[in-house]
Image (cartoon, rainbow, N blue to C red; front, side, top):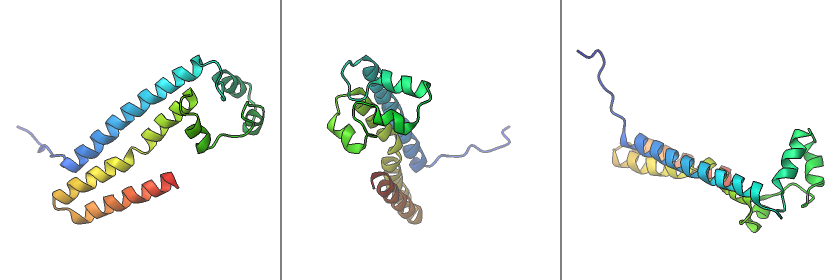
Length: 137
């Protein structure tokens, strides 16, 4: 005889978890691909061998970026302008992983609404919007 009853997981929780799970798997594969490409490419504006050697030598962030080929710390526009390089592919993978919470919360809010939890659906929708503003601002 069972001592405890089996608890049922709400569909909104399953949708949230599955969305986070699959987007994390996809992002990790993109990061892996970008890392492999960055170590194999020859004429990258951010050579992986230079960055790795500089970090292992204990150089400061300022020193690493001023002595690099681009001469300054890269911003989002650097990665968007160089999408075919390994470092940019790696950054895309990281961005997918970090921002995976946005679609997960959106999908979860829809299923919370359908299961007659309007307060939680509205809170999830607000959280999704605020997270999107925070990430993309």
